[in-house]
Amino acid sequence: MAQAEDKRQPVIVLVRPQLGENIGKAARAMLNFGLTDMRLVAPRDGWPNPAAGPAAAGADLVLERASVHETLAEAVADCSHVYATTVRKRGVTKPVLTPEQAAKDVIAAPGRSAIIFGPERSGLETDDVALARAIITVPINPEFGSLNLAQAVILCAYEWSKHVDLVQPTAEDLLPPAPQEEFEGMFEQLVAMLEPRGYFEPEARAVATRRTLRTMLTKPGWNHLELRTFRGVLSTLRRRPGSRPGDPRD
Image (cartoon, rainbow, N blue to C red; front, side):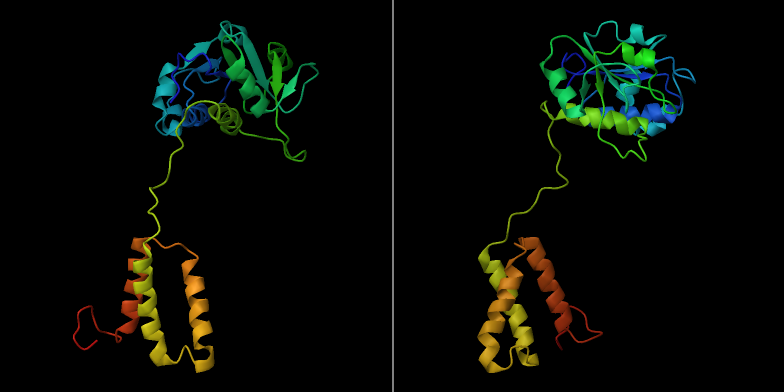
């Protein structure tokens, strides 16, 4: 994960945030993608806010390091590049970038960068945007252009994370496909159960039917655990109702 002293890591500045829950959710979005430097400008309910911790869902590091500032100018005083997130330009003529373009600039530019986000209800004011070097915006439904604070943060944080060495997590280690021998054992077990029931009749179609069945079953690329599970299903279906595994009558 990127460290706070990494100058490529943008500062996330929340301007006049209104709800502690939203600050916590923004912190969670930041830490998901390796960002740890949060700055708060005149939070409405003060700081620290007891509602932020539970909403952060474990991103306590971000909340503990968060600094509070009276003005936006103070919060970004050490930053050479400031980006304002807003759906519209608000009468200020500045370059307009997507989060992806802004992330590339942040990585390439010398000095610290800051991305500023406005209060939940109204967004950034014109004077806030005026402090920025560029505007970050995204194509959005013109009939409903409302992103919540954490959503806006995560859009920018994700694009930044694509340019640093974050390890993409995997839900689980996928097992490799099983060796052919294990598949053949399962397939022959299935065939042995189907033949007495006339599945491969008429005889003239038996070879083609068996081939089609094999082709269908080879598509998933079963691993050994899946094959063992499926064979357990077949063994259960073969038993008489009410019997149990190991019953000598089966």
